[in-house]
Length: 70
Image 1: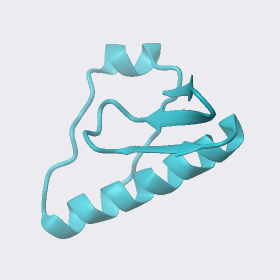
Image 2: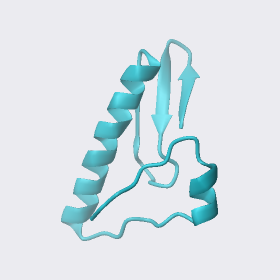
Image 3: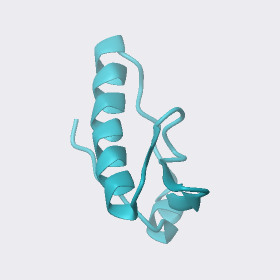
Image 4: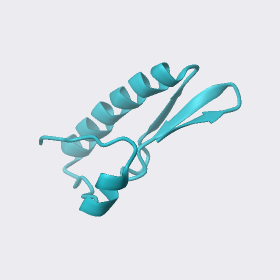
C-alpha cells in the first residue's frame, strides 16, 4: 500500500507488521518498500520467527501482491 502523505509517499505492507517505508515520489516509495521487505524477511528468518500467511482472498484483492520463496 502506497499513499500520499503531506510532502512524501508512505508505503506499508499491512500483512507484515513493522514493514514500512517512504519516499518523496511514488517510484521512490515503491523502491524503498521493496528494500524494506527484503530486510524485514531477512530479520525474521535470522530470528527464527514465522512469516505471517495471508488469507488467499485478501491477496487477490490487494493492490500490490508480493510472492516470497523461503
